[in-house]
Length: 159
Image (tube, rainbow, N blue to C red; front, side, top):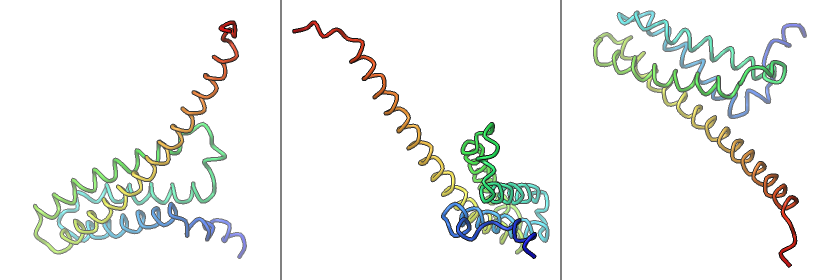
């Protein structure tokens, strides 16, 4: 069955921090989705389902290195926006599920939603730090080339 093995992400990627975060995001989203299906707060089940599918997409896209193949898309920004919106949506629907509904499945969905909020927040924090480091390196490289260009263009008649 080597053909089916090609569809699975590499073990090295799944053991990396990003792989573990995406696995946790997809797992918590699926558990939250199942809890909302079984609860009286079924109006909220679309958000965990969507986040589950998006987390799986990004898991396989990163594992298959689609970001290298499709360079027209800004992958870090898409991942950052996915994580920020997921954290905000999970936080809002978890508060509502815990406060408004009294059945156990709604409470469980709210608790798993809070855990998912934390995992998504950690992910967008790490993405933000990576993007900030990249931009700082780009700014320092631009400043160095600008300084070199100024030195080359300046007159050395100040002697």
